[in-house]
Length: 77
Image 1 (cartoon, helix red, strand yellow):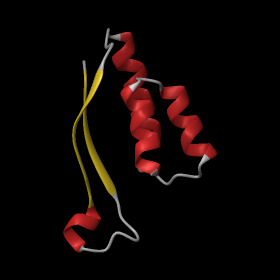
Image 2: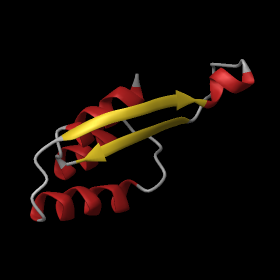
Image 3: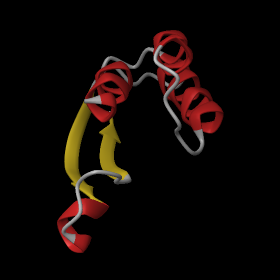
């Protein structure tokens, strides 16, 4: 699952790995560069942990899981 690849990098607070995974697997993600910047800034401000709060896809609402958009809420601490 492509979303899991992305979330794993965000949860490990690894901006460089996030960008690498997106390129390596040709993943389409809105806001990948702002997400990477947030990870760098959060670490510079002392964040040491990230926790997934919620995750959903548009497939759950539409009933079609062949082409979906994923949405995750992640708390950086």
